Image 1 (cartoon, rainbow, N blue to C red):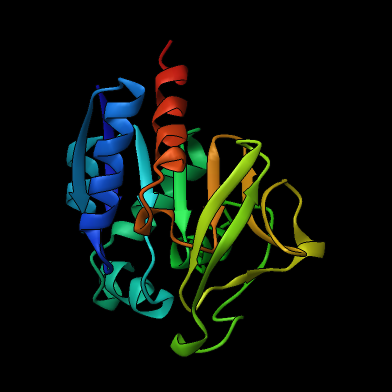
Image 2 (cartoon, rainbow, N blue to C red; image 1 turned 60 degrees about the vertical axis):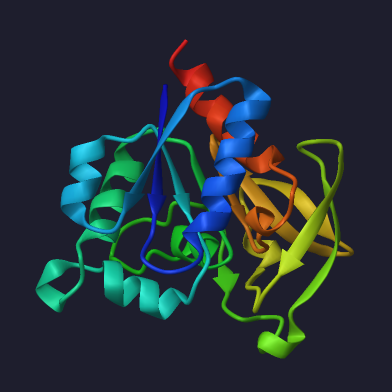
Length: 202
């Protein structure tokens, strides 16, 4: 049983839950999904893998920040855990921003820098096919006020490309994507996440 921590500070949890359920069926890996909003929930469920969904990164930092500043304490607890462990992670859109720029005084979780809303406003959102070297195939990319990796700063594996842009990176058992795989019917990134936890327990 893989315990999945879905960091629900903002965003549409139902889409990720549906993708995880499909991934569980496709991979044959049993899962339990735990919605995490507070530090106490993070400590209680002791999850194996984590998903940092999209949303608005400033709101995420405020809502999930340290309790002294009025936040829930979730992000400091999660980032501290990730820096000391090999726990697999999938970060999408704003989740990728937090992984590359946690802004908590500690080391980034990915050796890459990223620019918020680099593609423009909500009206500049789009859908297009991306090329995924990890799967050696294409994937439906849904970009909503997407951030952009600074290509020259990437010191890990570039695994997803849209035209000449890097839109997905991998660092060990962690993936950061500037698009939203959970808004498609393709659950391969979620399958990959579950497989990382399954492999690490063997």
